[in-house]
Length: 151
View (cartoon, rainbow, N blue to C red):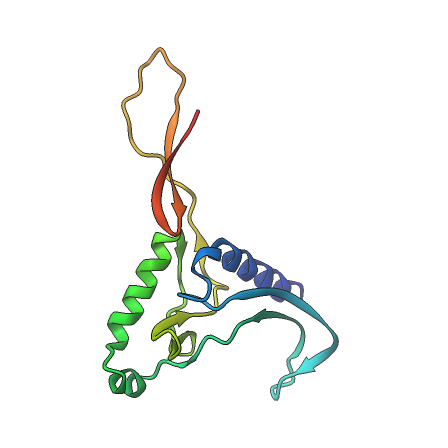
């Protein structure tokens, strides 16, 4: 049970990291909630904590996407690429995690349990042997690169 709570906590951290694309690329994350009474799945699994978020859409099935004039593979690739630009490596591309939101006419991704938040990488620059090393970092602003100087 503790491992499951840790996974939900990690998923919440990823949602908070992606704050600027909530409602556009991912559902709006409202927080983690602990249940007073456990919820039992048909399989007998006892749920005591959940993520609370906005509605994100319906499963992005190939037939649905074709009817909308959209390419499921291209939409999925574009969404995963945007996640990388936001500093998150999405590691769970699975049909149940790909949702089509008809209100905004975009793909939304869910389930960030396996996702990794990238650390800012320093830009290579010339370093004088007589100076302290200082780095220029790329950071995210609306999930687009901007630079910041850290010395």
